[in-house]
Length: 180
Image 1 (cartoon, rainbow, N blue to C red):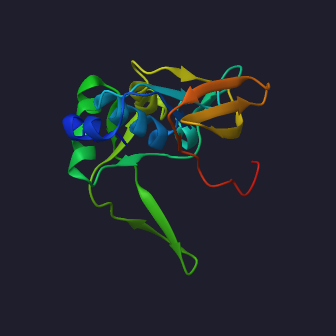
Image 2: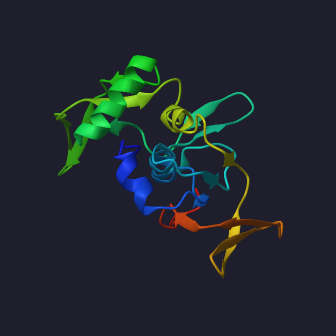
Image 3: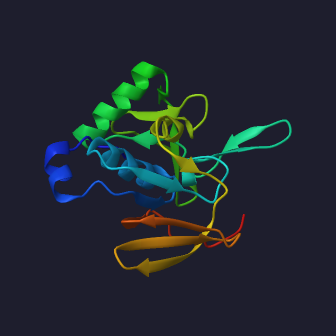
């Protein structure tokens, strides 16, 4: 998630060169926001058609559905502040769903500690909000990284060479076990 940083401290350590970020889920977009806040140019690449990674919303001919993350919780004070900003902007809303637990063949309602939030209108809304002002290339699957003197070049599955970049951030999830 995007946590504001001390831009002056970060910018003194990183030269103002472009950074490639591979992955437009919450981790990649949060890294991009932090770098931009520190005055660093970034380019985000994602193989999907939309941001959000595993909180993405799938759209079909007559329907849409969220898969992956069903809600957000905010435990860290910095993320709580981000969620409150999103709530005020209408990007998220409190969710008051009930949880059940199956134990020894019996269902029991489980109590929930703390608030939970859902994206409005879909779970990819917070990720879409994080992309505002960023340069994001969708439907771009990066298949190779090449280290060059003083930087990196990327290659996508269409054999396009992208870059050069001073550094690369890999914000990729663990591989999925099933192709459901």
